Image (cartoon, rainbow, N blue to C red; front, side, top):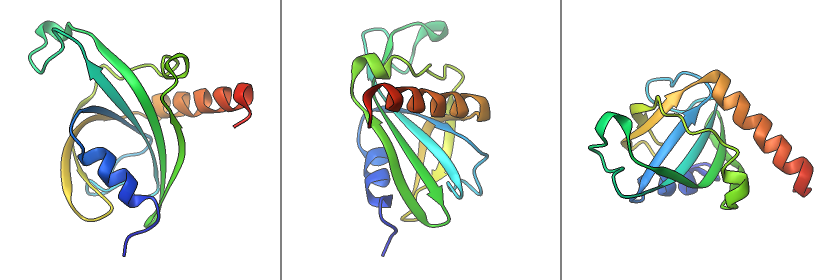
Length: 135
């Protein structure tokens, strides 16, 4: 049996489509132990396929999810598909391939970055959104 929320996170990471992860702290053996993870779902536009020339091409964020990992407990604390809110999250153009271990023990390679400052900036965006929308 897996902790509440871990199935949702695993399904999100495993489903087809481009995702970028912003992780607060270094991964522990590839696992998200005691961490905050933001998952940005990205819609790829023409010219933004895997072979982007010199990073050119459009990557449009379409949804942002926030998860907290505390031991083996995974809690989803944020999600928005709202375009005006999603635009507040700066895309991590310095993301690279990351080997991650999901809560169910399976492994995936995803694009992401461990960036304490950017993850904290995302936390501030979440607070800003919550203060203006009362959610």
